[in-house]
Structures are given as structure tokens and as C-alpha cells.
Length: 371
Image (cartoon, rainbow, N blue to C red; front, side, top):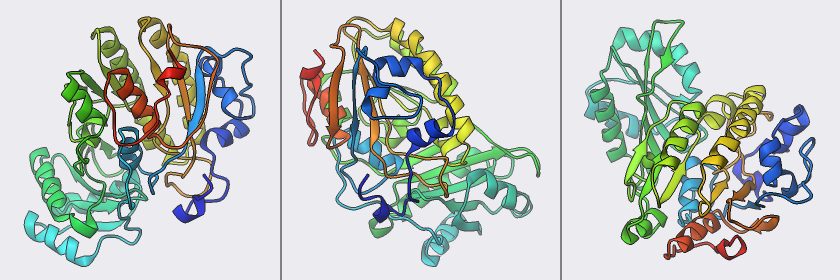
């Protein structure tokens, strides 16, 4: 986006475009929907008559993190970004955290989650001190070995941190990061838990709940919204698990909103500068799409987008401030629709809201262009 420098992005960040320049991407199904029609990209040609609608969205809120992006989809625009801590948290925050959990802590710096447990995991096992770290996101993360600090205690520590981190230090999320194994072979477990800030009232999931519309969350959506308005949820371990649970959820309800986050693009590949892993994950997702599309009813609508960029090809491991792609497909929806440049991710949420006869504070629906 034009304001990328204000968000400390490296020059030239362009997640999908840079991956396509790096090596040929085999994405025939997204291409048929209209991926190559959004803008010129190496090896992703425009389609003469796309199966769906295509466009891109700007982020209206000042941020490029998970909470900001997902909240904006639901109709929440932030006035100011969540705070970041590139040099670690203030001493008074750490001292209050340690006092209330009854233990000292390790770390208090910006780090990769896998690297910091490799570095400090042995000392953590000797001392019982939890590992505190942050990232380029607005997060306070607490890592602990499940055999040293049991899950219930790790979760309690995160609840304490969430209570401390209010006012000017109100980070977007506090995250429990449990791991297992021995020094040299630590692995993070599926027992991660996010403690988000409560979203303002009146966002999309609130409005759907008031309308009696079932909302099924797959992945970390329920955590991002503190389960508000969520009637059913599935936690996931990776993209494959998320796609399998999406199919299962798609086949069950007659009506409702299915909100899915696939975690690997960011967690496994974007933040780790694994461009090849990212490209392969895109291709696996694309290969799965026909099964998803075949399971859709005539009145279903699928929208594919992102909450921010996370370019694995540029220096740094941060999210990137980019326009995000938008594809929409439905068996009964119009084809070859150019949605253009949308002013906000809230246009997506407003479209969902309009479909169910409600509205949210921000965004312009494009439902009438699809039906």
C-alpha cells in the first residue's frame, strides 16, 4: 500500500507477486475464479471469462496484524494501532507479571517462537521460569514446557498478563505457547491459546447472533473475537486440518456463516521466510479448492482473502502492509465481475451482513454485484 513506509516495511513487499516472480506457481483453480485478473502477475494469467468475482482490498485501519485485519473484516476500524514492543516490554510490566505469577521470567525480547524455545528452553527447564517474548505483531507471548509448567498454570499466567496489559499497553493478543520435548528437539504443541482484546460491540458476529444466524469458526477466529457470536468452533493444527474441518462444516448446516483462518501461511512460512514452503502451501490450497466448490450449494458464496501481507521473500519476518486479494465464487453467483479496489476489508463483512439482512458500522456491500 502507499503508506508502507509508515509501517516499517522493507521496500518491495508483495507477497503473491514476489512468490510468482521467484518461481512458477501452479494455481489453476484460483486463476479460473479470477486471481490473474486482479493485477498482472508473473505466471498467473488473466482469464477471458472468470468463474467468479475478483478485486483487492485496502486496509483502512492503521495496522498490519491479525487482530486489526480480522476486526476490520467484521466492521471495526481502529483509530490507532495496537502497541508494539521491538525492544521488549517495559520493566514495570515484567515486574508486575513476575510478582503476580510467583516466578521470574526469561527472554523479554522480540524473537521467533521456535528460535526462542531453542535458545531458552533448557534454562526454562532448569529454572521453571516461563519464556516471555513478542514479535513484530502486537503480542505478549508466554512459552512453557508442558512438563515444567502445566497447561492450567500457563493459561492462568496468560490471563494475568491480559489483566495487566490494559490502557496504553493493551496489546492485541496474549498468547500461550506450550511446547514439549528435550533440548535440541523441542516442538510446540496444539494447545496454544490466544487471549484477545474484546472487540467493540456491533461488529459482524454480534449482528449475526442478534439475527439468529449460526456462525461456525474454523481456526483461530473464535480466539480473535473472544468467541462472541460464535455458535460452533473447530480448533486446527495446520492448513490441512483447517481445510478438512471446513469441508465438514460446509456439509452440515443449511444456513449460516463459516469463518475460516488457515494458519500455516503466516505461522509456518511467512514469518520464517520460507518462500518455497509458502508457494507449496498455496498450491496445496488451490488443489483442495475443487472439493470445496463441489460441496457448495447453489445459494452458497465463497470469499477468499487475507488479513494482511506476510512476504517471505523480503528482509525481516514481520507482516507487510499490502493490498489483499479478494475472490468470490458461488454456483449461483454472477461470473466475471470486477470488484475493483475496495476501500476497506469491511466491504467483505458488509457483504456478509447484507446477505443476512443486517448491517455493520463500516464497509460498502458488493452483494448486489454478485446476485
